[in-house]
Length: 147
Ligand SMILES: Cc1cc2nc3c(=O)[nH]c(=O)nc-3n(C[C@H](O)[C@H](O)[C@H](O)COP(=O)(O)O)c2cc1C
Image 1: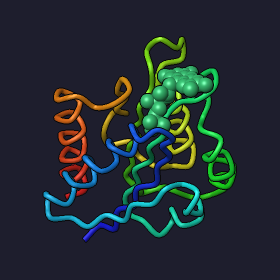
Image 2 (image 1 turned 60 degrees about the vertical axis):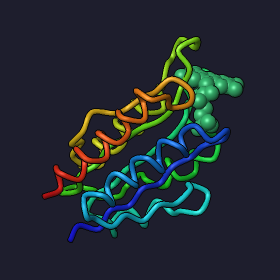
Image 3 (image 1 turned 120 degrees about the horizontal axis):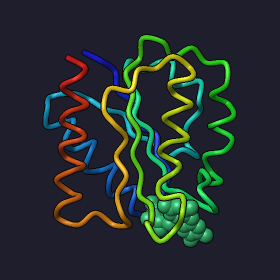
Image 4 (image 1 turned 135 degrees about the vertical axis):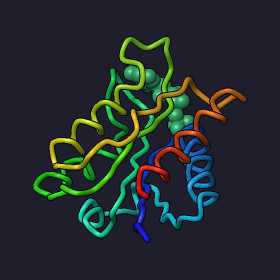
């Protein structure tokens, strides 16, 4: 069975809600997933997983959350080739760089050799009914890509 790891950052709980919905959906597909907040994770741990999910809200002017910066820098030099990955996060469309953290992490994973198997999922603030379904579908699609 693929070993799946999810690392996320959430300040006000929106990305955390996404993380829980996605993880639940993956478990419903019969897979196991380890979920950690980024302050509790080391980038080097990513090499232990077959499949990686990263989640982050966007901060500042299209920036990664502060608590993701060390992890992001520590990713440099890792070989993630052969790993399947996807990225999600909450943002706010009133900012010019909506959900840019999702793009930043996607590019980083790709630059280290990971294969993005589901397009990044950005949602507006807290998930409503439609976004809850999107999160569940994102998780289920990711799980199916690991088959
Ligand atoms: C100071 C500040 C800067 C922000 N900058 C952005 C931004 O550039 N782009 C964006 O999409 N959202 C931005 N946001 C909105 C957050 O990403 C949004 O509130 C998100 O839902 C927070 O997720 P969380 O609940 O997981 O912490 C910003 C919020 C704050 C308070």
